Amino acid sequence: MPILETQNLTYVYGEGTPFRIEALKNVNISIEKGELVGVIGHTGSGKSTLMQHLNGLLKPTSGKVLLGGEDIHASKEATRAARFRVGLCFQYPEYQLFESTVYKDIAFGPRNMGLNETEIRERVQRAAEFLEIRSDWMDKSPFDLSGGEKRRVAIAGVMAMQPEILILDEPTAGLDPRGRDRITDMICKYGLSTGSTVLVVSHSMDDVASFASRILVMDHGQNVLGGTVDEVFRQVDKLVSMGLDVPQLTKIFLRLQASGVSVRTDIYTLAQAKRELLRLFFEKGGTA
Amino acid sequence: MIKDITIGQYFPGNSLVHKLDPRAKLVLTFVYILLIFLCKNFVSLGILVAYLLVSVLLSRISVRMILKSLKPIVILVCITSVLQIFYNSDGTVLWELGKFKLTTGGVFMALFTTVRIIALVTASALLTYTTSPTLLTDAIERLFSPLKRVHINVHSIAMMMTIALRFIPTLIDEVDKIMSAQKARGADLDTGGIVQRGKALIPVFVPLFVSAFTRAYDLAFAMECRCYRGGEGRTRLRVMRLRARDYIVFLVTAVCVAGIAVANRLLPAVI
Image (cartoon, each protein chain N blue to C red):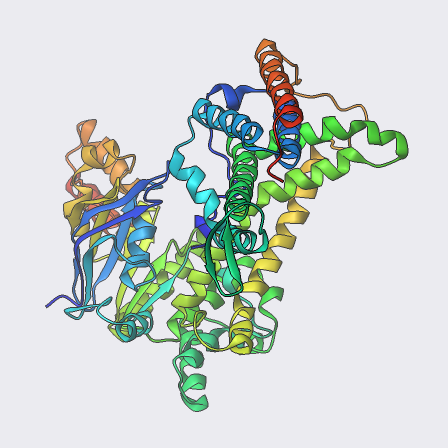
């Protein structure tokens, strides 16, 4: 049974005003335990709205969100429980920091869960480890950190709640390339070592290709494509027509193929590219 | 929830009311409100209501939006009309219960006041519905520019109003976002007593103030980068000019004012 599932999820903003927008139309997705899912889509495609439904922040206009097979809007308690079971980290989460010290800020979520001090300390420490937050930051004010550091503290704040499902909305937006890679790596490591389910919304096809075991594509409020990295990025034309793209590396190999070199085009990561290029190199008679 | 507030909202459109000179609209609304207080009987009130109805129809703002703007005053209207009904004991008695007397005078008064309040709110709602905040503050600046003589910096005040109005939706969005983010971390914002709720708002207000100040600094920088140095010698992109349609509306309004004056003079007053 999928751990998280939506059934005919529809959401309308501003019903009854001139600004009525159908943000989600009949979205049906299902997510298995332990998956690393990448969610891609153009701006305004409904990705963020969908994410806010998954932990019960938004209530669907029609349709259901099932967490472990149960409707999260069945009762008030179920909705509140869903908040803790599904951790949602918003876009630019550094703007949610408010406490006087980094430690207190990361502990905010666990404290709201009503845990005892030792448990809170343990969870904060663990989350800080994943995001490489140095112990000497713990007593600093979060407002004294740099942008990228704040971002990591904010993500740790959600991670420390140890949700069964962690959702990150564009965790790397606005960071420099190295910062992006670092955060992507940290999230990946977190997902693999804890066995939690992780959903990452992203604009960057390269990022998604590097970590996701499955990809969901949103367009105009609908889930139009879904499948493994290969299944999704194989449909280049469809993606381009939605204003999306394939990873940079894939583009290179597509160009190579178009200019007559016989290469595979299912290349999405640096490791795959290296292997394929070496294969080509040896095939053409090169030596190591 | 916060987004449901309609007062002060602007609905873009292309109607005659939208296109009127904002200064004209501002003055007309002011005159209209004045007239509401000056009219004394149902005929003059009728003229005012008709004037408003025509304006609403011309603006093509949906009736539902107008009704929405009236929602917050429902209680006020109810209380005042109930008070009016029993306070006034003129005219013939319709119904009596001990000390309470329901008279025709009371009913008329209640009706009169209700219509007045509704017209007042609708007129001001119509102004903001059909005029963008920028145009509105522009108009205020122009109308009050004579105050420069007495060393009141009208331009700065208008600029501050523009900025404040401009950032209300931005900050509302921001509050929404921060509230969602903190709720996602398990913050309980909707239950508990006053003290508890006040405390629960700290995680919302601290980030809000931090970002509001950052925004203010950024905006000041951006304005200086574009050589903003106050109103001195500043020219406008949109020069406001009264057009034929404005004069026609003035004329129609003048006729209505004359009508109300005559009705007030010739017919018996309700109040």
